[in-house]
Image 1 (tube, rainbow, N blue to C red):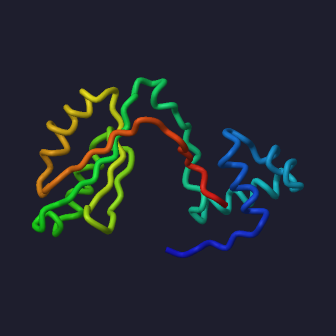
Image 2: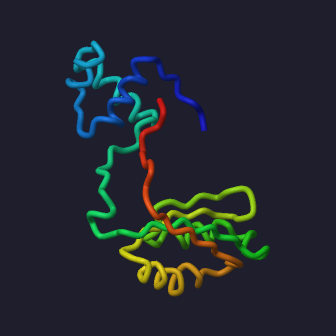
Length: 155
């Protein structure tokens, strides 16, 4: 994976795209002193280079009824570790799993999971997650409150 060369203007554009939902090239150009067309060309170049992957709508999980967030630390058996990709492919099928990371340390994976309540997490855990092959241990940490949550990178 290669780093893409970004100048200060590119970084300002990226910062505005992250912090101002739905902002267009004309508004960005006006804020940073660039014409709309020049701004649009820079945005397009960054899309083509893969710097800008997507501009998703971010929902408030609690307002849509997903009040429980859990971080699950998953440790695989030694046999399971030889099939890290199998576990990763399996877990991608569950919409409850928002993020899945391979980590170094005492566990193999860190999952961020959302469900409507604790009972729904319990059902997900027993009927889906714990049934995956190669799992030795799952330690779940239930989030009490969000202190900071952002998708914006510190450009």
